[in-house]
Image (cartoon, rainbow, N blue to C red):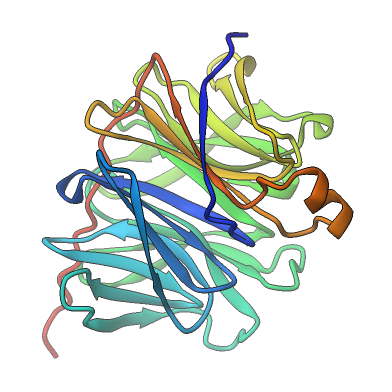
Length: 297
């Protein structure tokens, strides 16, 4: 496995997550969930700015024009980057105040896929929802514990999904027109000794780059064979997610966490909570923009 050159940025997130590259802003975005902080790294200067939100901010998605779609606690928020205007679009799971959104992605048709979990990490408490252009919410998977990484194949025929404690990447058949999914198989089994699968992204060769929480790295897997191909070693234990970006989509931004580390371990791994940037040989694909046009009442 080849060595990678890492650049570390001292964001010091308690729970860094949700990285995304949005080309029209020439920026990476990510969040620190527990502090409700949104980070923006502008390219090519790599300068970082932050904005704070009241609550747990788990998801950043690309909206139209200057808008971001944010997953804040259990609500989906439309946020204007220029004016700061916020609009609540919807809320899920009103009856479960201890729940929050976790990972979220946009499919090739602009529909939002977003998962929930219990902040007590209750087994089977979470779900995966699909949200249409007119904000119709449909539950697509249930009995999840930590709804996490998602990716679609380039031909739009398969959808990969991670419920972290299962240690598996599931492959679903995907109908791009209807947005329906059907379970096909377990694509990858991740051994516990190399951590727990968390966030992920897919490269131009169809390989999955998966952040391993407790596994000190991002691992490149072949979902067709289930074989491990490569690893980006990181100087921190808890690696949470990754996203391709930069003008050539060949920069991998990696988020990490300080949570579940004792003071002694934080001293041993002082870069925990930072984000890391790595140039890779095989880049990724462009981010999908969410299509949200609520119908007028």
